[in-house]
Image (cartoon, rainbow, N blue to C red):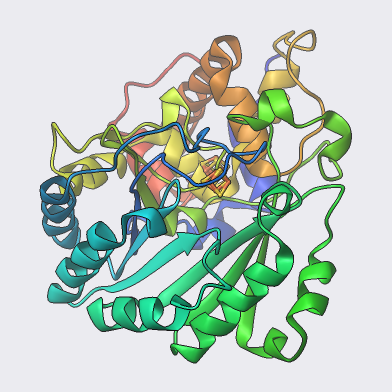
Length: 362
Ligand code: SF4
Ligand code: SF4
């Protein structure tokens, strides 16, 4: 007897479908994340998009401004988030982008490695960016960043950011060699004014080859969590490809929503509301697919432990055999849901999508 997809869905929703009333109908991201460049002043061993000094160039300003104009039509976008690569290597482009975002009434954040933290021009640079429309700064660090950029430089960048009146976050890529408490201790009196966000190192991009398994954080067989929070932030990369999240694990073919060079991003997002994979990930996360993957005889190649949900997601969607199991599970779920009597159906986007699909054999 096969696996009942609706039972797994109900279990992951922790009970009956009635409890799934918070399964949103809309797909309404509020941050437009733009990967401005692959150029970086350093080349961290864990970098998910293999950025470094050898990469040239950045997105063109007219592409970026057109993208923001289109994104405003989504209706829910409130902020533009610039990352890379290292955006501070392209200050003129960053400033022009911030001004364009501000012209639409949007907030703006930049993610940086903070290499400029102890520079004499740090305060002036941040004041100028703030005048252009910067509202928040995210500074990334990890044991891998710290092979190039000392933690006291990162702390100095955070202090300058607070002096400029910016909302300040330190993104910590957790690994066996660095615990987040180290960052909190280093911040000292600043700790109360700086948000610390921790995300695990994932074996994607350069990390797949350059980070030893012993350096990864602790692994678990059942990574929990859905993608709803992550799906608040769209990502657009250097090729114009659009992704539903900015996680390093998310850049896999099945999650590519479209290309902003060919289709306006507001139309891409409208179309994504009908994407069954995005709907399942939004509601219950990638662990929904584990029973199907473990029942498909992939044990020879598919990992059995994961750093977090995004590691599982990357593993299952970057392996073509696993990705086809995931696609079949989505079709099966739609088929099962469409055959349920109306009062027994889950509430929300999964049911809405299922109603429009051709029922698959169960
Ligand atoms: S992780 Fe960030 S700082 Fe490190 S190489 Fe990649 S883009 Fe640069
Ligand atoms: S699980 Fe996948 S889709 Fe969800 S946030 Fe992580 S990488 Fe993105």
